[in-house]
Image (cartoon, rainbow, N blue to C red; front, top):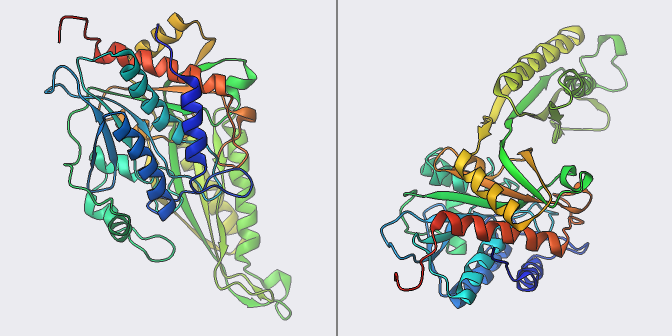
Length: 413
């Protein structure tokens, strides 16, 4: 079995971490920002040094290609993303991109040619921190989101995706989509399961269902000093009870059911005015579609009950839905064979987070490889991985991709 150059991979990770470095040791490269552009340019320079050709599509997805013996064959693709959360870590997304680059570099070191071409994809706006929804680069690539709809999305400052692509120079001309033989994504787990179970590799079997909901609570704004408590229609107090109900929902669907309220806002807030309109978000997750459907239905009933009790109105709208997605059995088996041959401790795992691989899995055969992250911490400046784990994951990726792409034996070329 082949081994990657772990020292080179780690040096690349640390160099990329300096682009958009934050004061507390993390990274901030919001999608299509100047820092994101700088990160892409650093990666592109490394790709050119490795003899890879580069192309960019209309939504800004960046591709680095290593030719295969059969130029007509669909490529075996690796990848992830370089954009981060506002106070993100050094490994979320970037590890998958640079592990893919290490695969290319190591094949170059060893003089190995593959039958099928290889590509690394850097997907645009995976995080969704600047533009929502998340993962729209891979969504446009796979046909799940219309290009013009994506280009018209605006950030909080009113800048559209189209404008951001133009300003960073990443409005490319490569045709959207195209055939992909298979897609492999290496990623940090972003949770504590592998570390808690002392496992080096997670063989990912699929992704759980995700639903993002927007909740609006309508009460009545009134004077804080002249309105008796019994006569108030306080949207914030009502929202507080509703948020408690969201937490209780997770208890009702434990242990796989997960609920999160990540954003909360009071319209036209003033310290001496009873809140009249409150908005908050809900994130629901479960690995089975029929259960998350029941969670959403139950949530609606709970919120309506609180609203009726308090004389409020509540509306719930879907912002984004991602169904449960199993990965391709043969691709998962290819990863499993690589893990077994390398002798790593491992376990099968369902991804709790959304990834570009979830969207690619509806487009082409797909699998993921997880490595542990220290303390299970992610989306945080303190996010960390161990160099040995980073190397182990790259070793698995290298051997799985080579098995899928096919190795050209001496004398065949």
